[in-house]
Length: 265
Image 1 (tube, rainbow, N blue to C red):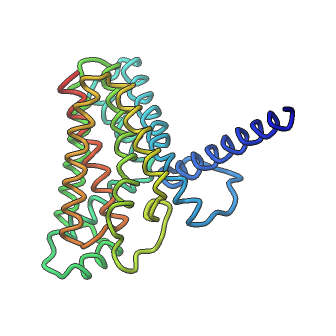
Image 2 (spheres, rainbow, N blue to C red):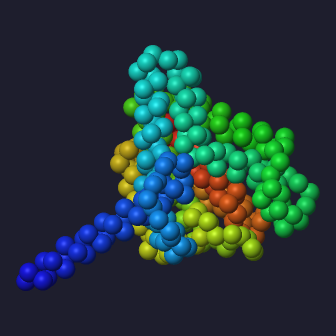
Image 3 (cartoon, rainbow, N blue to C red):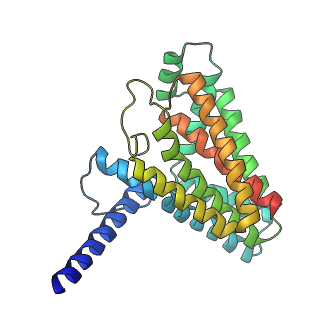
């Protein structure tokens, strides 16, 4: 009996350590937060770590919501507080989403074959279309936060949208092919099936927890439809996903969840 109990304790400890590693890997992949002592890891670890992407999204959302709440508590104008919140989001994620959206938008409107568009995204030069897409997504997020009826409502929407958007990434990389020659990174490596199911369950739970059943289900439905539409467009234009096109899916889902959360709340 003692051996059985000890084996269970060891199993729980191993599971806890595995989750802690995956959370740290997810934070490293999606943020610029310091992560000392993580050690070496390979594609297999990255594929498993995608189950923790919703948790990384939760951490991002909590930090951004806290910036907004503190700014509002300091009696800053709501517009200023909203800009500070989105600024914190941009800085925290290392501008990966914004630059990916800009690069994809520029490449999308080039009169070139798919392979040339992919090369353009790999070596982006910010053009008019990319700049407009960048301004549109940032200003829309600011406007949506401003539309929230209260600080609490805005904070909940930010957290739910951040978690949901990061949940979509492993769903896309699992179901769509990568473009030929795409280098494997922590966000582009194909996740394991268990990681996809776990990430999906966590994402749904976080959205319902912070938005409640009515707004939560609306956000999941609208976010899912918009995210799927963005993924379909990527597949249609490129034949598969790239690092930059994943940013488009993330941003589109984030905006969709924000809209549903603000409208239904």
